Structure formats: structure tokens, C-alpha cells
Image 1 (tube, one colour):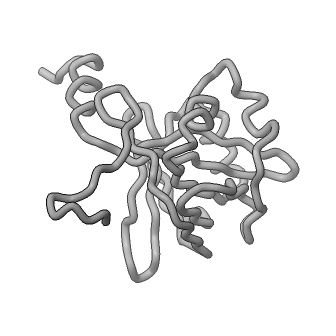
Image 2 (image 1 turned 180 degrees about the vertical axis):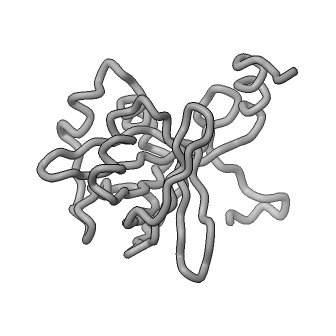
Length: 166
């Protein structure tokens, strides 16, 4: 018998994760959502993977627009993460947010520690999510620490055991 949703959430909470906002564009419409299920998938060709809830507006926009941006949030962007995670703010998420338009048209949020611009390469259906694989068209990396989420809270990074920061 499979575990319950609550058991799964509790168990996965033990896994520290970076926090991203995945964005997309279709025509003149843009949208985005907070996503912790992101990873690099391949060096050659350069591929990124995001797992998206089927019910999200952003998920449909990625399918229609054939592109997505991955914005790896900086440690000071926890309020932005909350806004893009909340259904309450779903239709006003980008208000006042500084972003650049990528080659694909996907919004890339300024101030993130890294941004990836991806063309949709493959889609896989799994449970209540879609797995999107994107061919990375461009990337930029800025200085600063990433936002980390662990056991239901945002966290900071600590120095390694040698006392030096990574």
C-alpha cells in the first residue's frame, strides 16, 4: 500500500531544496509559479527538468508557449517565492517584479542567483504532475546565496566545516 499524501509531504520536507520560480510566456501573456522540483538533467545537450502541478496556469502556458524560464531565487527573495506560490496572488504575481525577456520570450527575474532560458523539449505525465524537459538556450549567474527551503521554512546557507564559505 502506498503512503498517504501527508506522509509523503513530511518525508520530502527532510530534503533541503533550492527555490525557483518557473516562468513562461504564450503570446502576450506571462505567468510563473514557485517550484522546488527542479534539476539539471544533461550536460550534452544541456537540459533542465521542472515538475509542475497539472492544475497550474503556468503549466498550461509552458505547454502552449513551448518555453520556460527557471529563476533560482536569492536568499533575500523569500517574499517573491511566497507570492508566486500563493493562489491568492495568481493573477498579479508579476506586478512590480523586475524581469528581462529571454530569447524564448520567458520572463527571467532580476536579482535571482541564476536564470535559465529553456525551449520545451519533452513532456512526461506522472501522477498529478507534468515533467517538462527544456533545452537550455541561455544562462546567467549572479553573485549571492540561494534561497533554501527545508522542513517547512526558508533557510540560509552556513559555512562549511573548515569555516570557509563555498
